[in-house]
Length: 350
Image (cartoon, rainbow, N blue to C red; front, side, top):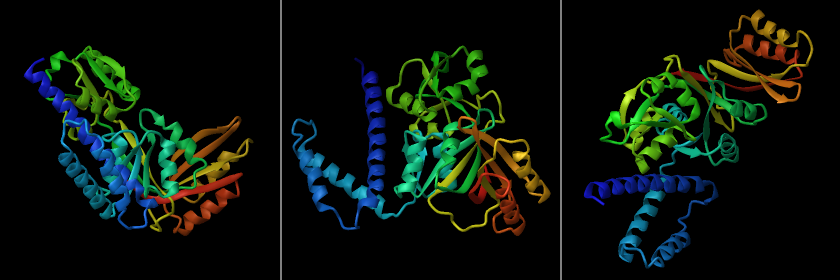
């Protein structure tokens, strides 16, 4: 046991405390749907009573009571700000989190473990919006998300196309020569394969790029680093050992912004999903409709729905308010078994 070692332990604990405080405030924001607006003094008393009964804590009762009063006051103050809540899948610092903040820099971003939970939370009204990745230039479509989009009642109200710029991140003071293992999501590690091989770094899979960064910040394993974003380095206080370590600089991800209702803005792009009959020419008929109208299709993807049945996603330039686009949509509907608009929206390229 050394002074330096103890200080490193304290730094790890501080990182956990900050992460847990953020999580507590986020849970407070999610309670808004269940509240009438009146201060729940009974709940406050319950929390303070529970804290007071933990008499074996090193911190004295006066300190802990004051601490929790301040935490609850801050929680209420955050709730009173009326922030929009935007959900994403992953850990804070993930690329989805960065996309959500790029879309609305004033919103509170809320992490969820699964994509389906983001969809469900928007549908239930717990969230105002959800931000989910739909495709990556290197990895292709995000299958889980597109499968849910086939049946969801949510509307696409925005899209963000942003670069994926991987960095090698380590705890402050780490000598790059001591790094032996890089932790990250499997896809991120695969996208940085040449860099890892060139620097003789072992690739260790983690559930999430930002989760790997958080683990490095909180646990500080020897000889370890994370492959994650610059945003994650800022969030978790990590040093960037090397930036732009991905094998291809053309690595970009496209995200959809989802809401319960359409927002009424015309937008510059539309997304739709349809089911064509399993017969020759059915898909061609839809494509011909858009071609004849001079409408540019920017995405065509098929996703398995049931055995022998595929959902076809199309994105195209324009807006439902444009009579030419509206006519093409109606003509396309007549060509297929089912044609459903996901939404018209503005797309931002970062």
